[in-house]
Length: 118
Image (cartoon, rainbow, N blue to C red; front, side, top):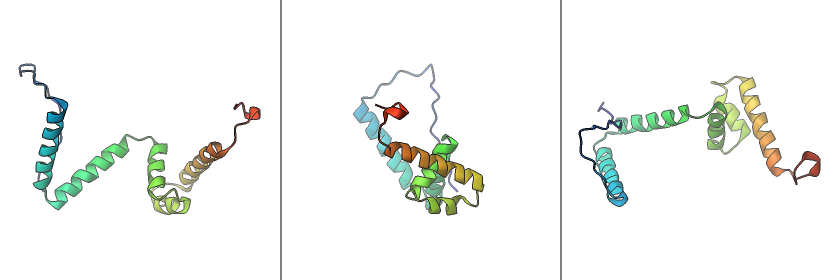
């Protein structure tokens, strides 16, 4: 497997200050990314996408993660339950789905002075 480039920032205080205008900077980024992609084999590209997805999802709260999975399945409760049954407990699945239903109901309810909404 080819090594995967992981961008990092390591400013050298001895290096000259270089400022690119935003268009040239974006062109350089895109050209470099295209060159890197063209040099990757399928497995390396697959690993890069996997790492990007898992790293991004690791930053989500538990609710946001479940919401991401739920929405991927078209917000279908049964498909969400089926997908998660091997990784989450029934209580965790039910708690998430109850929260989603409460939020959805509150979005669909009419404002009322009885609830303090005007």
